[in-house]
Image (cartoon, rainbow, N blue to C red; front, side):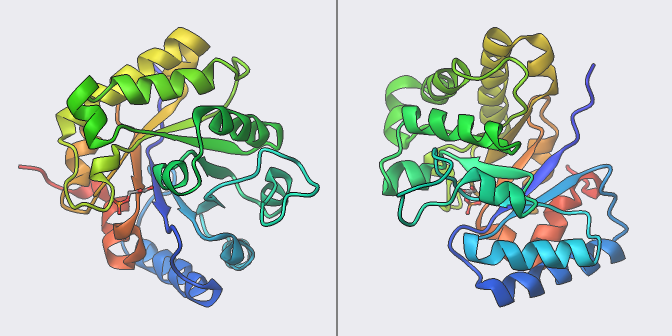
Length: 261
Ligand code: 13P
């Protein structure tokens, strides 16, 4: 049985300028230090806007903080005439470990489809970044097809193009649960995360399925995180709104200490 280290990831979306990002990371560090958080037990990652990454990197490296960080998107291309885009090479050079790909807000706002998500995932892997591949159904999908069909289909398309030894993270984020305050139930999250793991097994093999972390995202808060983490196939969370409040995010990171009724 592979031991999957839980990952609590904060997707800041388009929040915090670089000055606030420094203050946030420092405050998170001392809050977790005071709470005797063990980075070996739970990995913490933040996903700042591109303009903050250099500041976050220097803060983390100068003080040897045990946080990973990553970009919220990347270009499928390495370089060239792509105004406004950011290459995986640049993110890797800044020390990013991860990059979020295919978030539903990018799928909606920028019309990203599974083919583009696949190309971006390949670009991430090429540059040594771990892609956090986001999948999830809308409320219309949920009504028509149930919870698993759409996210499973989205993931299958991407996985089909990846090398078998690709190091990836998968995030199940039902679109209807994002920013709505209406999280999926732990049982719903477990059902879809298990289905996603089964697709990983089918396409990349059993070892990859056992090693890959599958996260849940969508209205995760300190009051519900422990109930998700109790589920066998949920290995962490991709947190939006609640990741912008240091105290709340630190509480989420410390989910192993929570007592659930
Ligand atoms: P919320 O936690 O604000 O629902 O956002 C989830 C999300 O989209 C993380 O990527």
